Amino acid sequence: MANERGSWGSNIGFLLAAIGSAVGLGNIWGFPYKMGKSGGFTFLLIYLLLAVFVGFVIMMGELAMGRKTGKGTVGAYHALSKKFKWVGWLAVFSPFVIMSFYSVLGGYCIEYMALNLSNLAFAGAEIKTGSDLFGAMLTNPFGCVAFTLLFLIICYLINRGGVSGGIEKFNKVGMPALFVMLVIIIIRSLTLPGAMEGLKFMFVPGYAVKAGFIAAEPNFATVLATAGGQMFFSLSLAMGVMITYGSYLDKKEDLVKNSAVIVVADTVVATMAGIAVIPAAVANGIQNGIPLNEIKLGGPSLLFVTLQDVFQAMGTIGPLFGVIFYLLVLIAAISSAISLVEVVATFFMDRAAAKGQEGNRHRIVLLVCLAIMVEAALVAVDGLGSNGIWVPGQATFGIHGWNDCWLDFMDMMSEGIAMPLGALLMSIMVGWEIKPKTLLDEIHSGASSKIDGFFAFCIKFIVPLGMVLILLGQINDFFGLGIFG
Ligand code: PHE
Image (cartoon, rainbow, N blue to C red; front, side, top):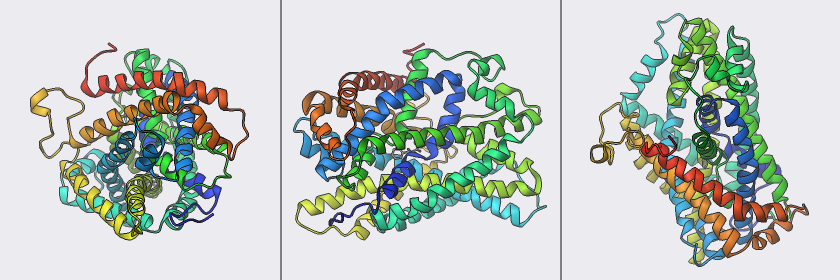
């Protein structure tokens, strides 16, 4: 059903777009390495429990908030509650901040894809190691800014096409393609000698410590906070995305089923990404005689150093896998980035509509992307702290972790604080102020499922408790406070 705001062309189109938002850099590198660092199997278990009792519930709640009000984040909170109306602002602020580093990372993917293409074209030419390449890239601010700009131009071109003509269209092609490429990389990864060690690291309880990947099992509270933060980021929750996407959804669609599909798909892809990435990195480390505890599985170096080395070690065919892999990551990054841009763009479109004007989508999307470019340029020039640029608070507090580089600082503000805080406030608003029934009425318009008791109980008790723990864990992590030992 079309209205002037636009709407999804079909339910499957909506689903692919929502899955596209969820599946992103968080799945492809965050999930595997956090799982590894947190002792593998325990992390997986906690992650799954949180996904069902917290993620799934908030997902349903956010989609219902959007569809009920027919508004983006700020509009939806405004329409639902007097006390909590300002929470909407938090969820416009965070996507904007996340884009400051997400687009830089997207730019790195384009650069690496181009690099592997040229390695493929000029086979036999001298090839640098992953860490030399990464270092050279980070210390070339002009290159990083240019590729960030390219990434944002791609987002602009998609978002200006609108909800069904741009976002949905891209995801309908991009998501199936991503899946096929992921399967190709998994097959290649698992057939490398030594890959089984990587698989065991992921799935055998206690193996990470036993085999010597990590020195000791991390404590339970840390794992809970890590898994919780990861789950939120990965499912694109508390960022206004699902409220915004829900606002374009038809009343007859089943929110319960849709939420379940999104959560399951995101978790499956995260696990698959782990299987594609970790065994390859471990196998390559073993072949080169690197001790297990020194194989770099964390952070940007996993994707841009360790894996690049893996592709280069594969000989002439390696760069081909490199191109496939970085294209896959790029598609994942684009499909998430366009959802973040859409949150901010929808906010301005709704505002124009509230004033009785017709928002010009092209112009609004252009301005949003330009504003993102300004903040992203800072993160790009900073080059993960390689270029000696000042970061707020560094000298003042002398604490390391959240302020080592601009990327960490932006991440701390958005993923670290705004996201769990937003989700906590949302659950208090729904559970205790407007009451679960308000959203359940909306959910019932397309679903007859017997979900009421579960939804009400979780949103009133489990979600707020979980969010407080996650928030504490994030603050502890970013500020290195050592609350959990
Ligand atoms: N879910 C995306 C990922 O896993 C990131 C994201 C977060 C996108 C929040 C939109 C909103 O990388």
